[in-house]
Length: 390
Image 1 (spheres, rainbow, N blue to C red):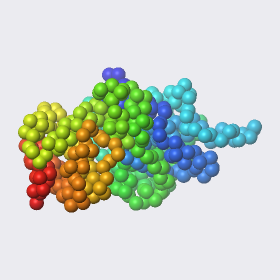
Image 2 (cartoon, helix red, strand yellow):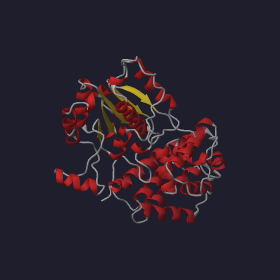
Image 3 (cartoon, helix red, strand yellow):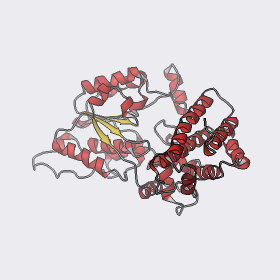
Image 4 (cartoon, rainbow, N blue to C red):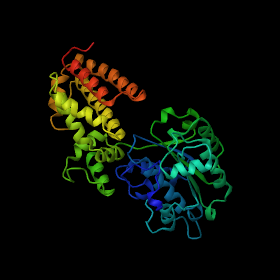
């Protein structure tokens, strides 16, 4: 099997792995903050890289790791004085460290991520190669770090551990990472990627310095897709602002939207809502059929997500009296203004969002018929639009 074809739990389907993305767009402030700490000579041994999903946290971690390993402590000073203070994390693509990291053969780096499912090493390895991953990072994966730390730092340089993602650590694995943070091995930097840092152990958060990444502008989301050689359906001339609005400034989410034709799905949902309180049976059935399609679990999850997205925008429009400045689909602004013109309407949509979200999650958990679940949701939306919600 070609190594490039082996599934990886930290790769977004349809996009390059973060180690392959040498250029990170839109996170100059975070990079500057890290370099400031590095150049101060008092760099923290634990870093919590936070921000919404898909904004480049893993790419930032790999950039930092590449920079640290390629710039060992011994060359920070020397016979001819201190070298120039670095003002970028960029490392040339032909640098030996960059080449080794690209091929997964850098001895100074340990990547901690979810392993294959199974109770034995043989089963875990087989399932990993088939893309069947555990839902959490287990203590079994953290034990593999013992061999990593038993080796001396490469040529006297640094060792770097990337945890992708810390949100996935189970209790025992989290305690193993906490112990490392409390008693870090010499010349070791831990980079913890966290989508929801508030859910981590407070003791882990307190022992790390936070590096927060921000959502990207529509233009940068568009540029990042082009850099990753991902062309939105409709071509490069499709509306990047609408896609970025749907993706909330997340490149990872934009990749998912492109792969599953999210903009078209949301446009259909907006058209359905725009017809309310009339019941548009054709559009409702089309949405239900998409949700019930065989093998369409990812698309069904996206439909549920887009319903949540639309309800949140309806609730916000009524509560604030303001329509989002960027439409996520044609006709959305008119739909929001008509269906949620007052704070009372906003409250009705907010209450409906909570109820509908709970219904969808429960329906998924107990394997209810997806088509029936969607039609039930459409009836609920119709009731709210007509002012008949309980």
